[in-house]
Image (cartoon, rainbow, N blue to C red; front, side, top):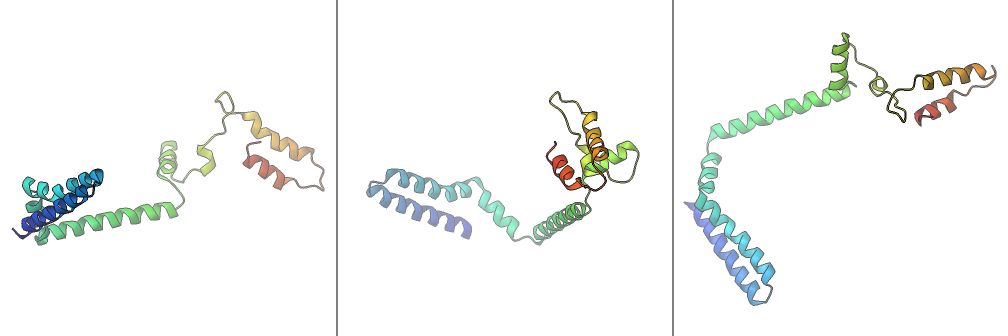
Amino acid sequence: MLAETICSAASAAGLGVAAITAYRKRFLTATRIAAYSLVPVGLVLTGVVAWVSGIAFKPSVWVGFGVLGLAWLLFMTTRAVERRGGSTRAERKAARAAGRDEAVAPGASAPSLGAGGQARPQAAAKPKQKQEAAPAGEDFSDIEAILKKHGI
């Protein structure tokens, strides 16, 4: 009963503000204020206010919210632990499909595709040829790592 009275008073006050705004020739703003003012009365008439006030004062409802919060906390904790482990669900699924228990390397799940959409086996052989061609005194591993990173 108290909630319905408060909603009705809020609607009446909002409609009064809308009337004053309309008097000042700001009709668009006045219409918006009137629309917002009618929401509390609409909630009272549909029974939403009675439903919410019935829920708010039941201890079993608050226990239910606590259980939902605990479930959310457990879910988020397991997601955080999963992310810290370094493996994703897709990697573990691929490992199980391959018959292994260990996780797949991150780069192994994304093959490099050429312009035709097929993997290029000769691209993996090129860095080895470059290493064999380099003299013994020079080390180009840093340059090769940068080139590999950019797909060259």
